[in-house]
Each structure stands twice: as structure tokens, then as C-alpha cells.
Amino acid sequence: MADDTPWLSPGERRAWLGLVAVAELLPGRLDQQLQRDAGLTHFEYQVLAMLSEAPGRALRMTALARRTNATLPRLSHVVKRLEQRGLVERAGSPQDRRATDAHLTDAGWAAVVAAAPGHVRTARALTVDALTPEDVEHLTRITAAMLRRLDPEGRMTPPD
Image 1 (cartoon, helix red, strand yellow):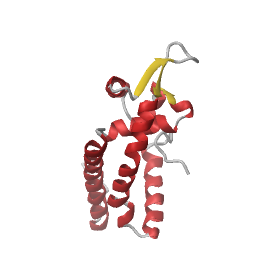
Image 2 (cartoon, rainbow, N blue to C red):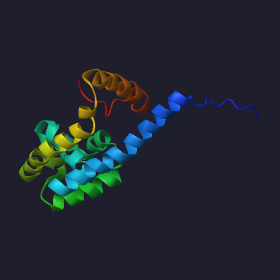
Image 3 (spheres, rainbow, N blue to C red):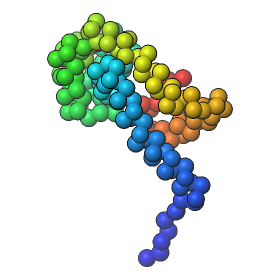
Image 4 (cartoon, one colour):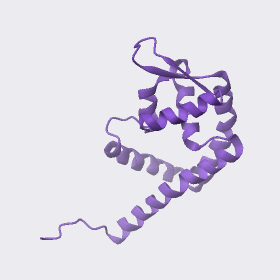
């Protein structure tokens, strides 16, 4: 059998390993800051943030799962924890009795508003501040190209 594997060049390998390292290290650092300063995991923050940006601060659970790249069982477990803390409420969807909506409570809104500055400072310090303005433009193009392949439906593609 012929080996037709398109092996990475040394430069491609460095880029790939750098990307893998960032993908491994960044979530932990973001999680660490949010746990310390806001008592939230990074995923819990993402759930609250997606709800905070939604019309009426509510989303159908299936839409919230898509926006956070979560399975419904994982999302349900996390939303249950957030409900117990009074940050989120679940209710039947007024548009479809078979569906469930998650709604950000006033306490959830206050939590995400309080957590956002520290999260943004940390995200900026770990990423954007390490780059030149030209690097940021390149990173935007690079991540957009990767997301077109990883997320062809555009579920997690950032807005313009």
C-alpha cells in the first residue's frame, strides 16, 4: 500500500503544534480566571453570555446547544446547575409546547455583567495584546477559513 499521506512540512508542523497548544492552554486559563473571579466555569459563562445576547435574553435549548457547541445532555446538566443558582430559568416554549426555552434571570444578567470585564481583560491579555493589529487581521482571516470547514452551518461563526 502506497503512503499517500500529505505529511506536514516543518513550517506547517510548527503552525499546527502551535495551534494545538493554544487550543489546549487557552480554555484552562479562561476557566481559571472565571472560577476565581466569578464562580463560573468558562462553559457556564458562555451559556450566560449567549442568553444575554439573545432577544428577550432567551433561547430554545436546542439553539443554545448549537451556539455553545454542546450536546443537549451536557447543556441540560449545566443549565440545571445555573437554575439552582437562580441565574437561568427553563420553561416551555410559547411557540412550541414540545420545546423548552432557557431564559436569563435578572440575577443571571447581573452575573454575566459582573464577570464580563474580568473575562475580557483576561482574554485580551492572553490573545489580542500579544498580537500586532496586522496579526489580529491575519488571525481573523485564518480563523474564518478554519471555521468555514469546521462549522459550515456557521453556528459558532462570530458576527461581523
